[in-house]
Amino acid sequence: MRHLKKCFSSLAAILFIGQIISGCQLKKRDVETGKEPIVLPPGPSSTVTRASKNHKFIVRSSTEGLSVRSDNKIAYSIVTGDLLVPSGELSVEASYRIPDLPSAGEFKATAVSDGPGKYSIGYNIPAAGLWEIKLVFVEKGSVVDEMLYTYPISELPKEVKPTKNGKYFVRASVDTLKSGEENKITYTVVGDNLEMPAAGLSVEAIYWMPDMPEMGKFNASGTSSAPGKFALTYEISMPGLWEITLKFYENGSQVDEVVYSYNVET
Image (tube, one colour):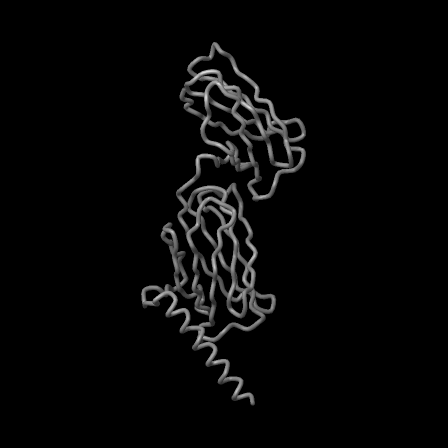
């Protein structure tokens, strides 16, 4: 019976590897050593198969492409270095960061198991840059191997900006303004740990025309509908270059700010 179980296990592993090879047209150059991060193309999709750092696992990662958004998904299929399905004791921990921006810190992602050796992980990417993803493989409470991926994410939408001191990321609902109208902009503010700011966060919005300082500066009116959600109204009287400064306060003290510039047309 033990011999029969071993045969079934080997057969399952062979079928599993066959799926990997047929699914991504595995070639020799596709399997890397895992000792150095691999830079993946920023195209619409990518599938890469490579070994972990200590060659304990072979991992296929599949994604439709990463961008600045909160719903990036990567699917991972894992077999052991002996081409066997991993044991049920294997778990995967994922973290990601921008190496060139250490002040932003390291973020954690939750791995969801879709079956033996199969995991899906969601990544909330708040800003453009060169992002590094680290997978750590754990068995019986001990780290047994790891691997690194590097993704260049270059497209930062106009409506998403990091604040001056990197304390928040701000998403604006519009990226254009119109003259002679009341322009409403909704802002969503998340902290550098990708969590909503505390309820005590408040915003002051000041806007003006840098080329016409004699007009003075104006304060936008608005409300906060929920923590990290602000709806502000700007009365733009004429076309030209307008600048909006959002100042963020915690417990009555300014902690950060972000500046937007709009070329308003007639």
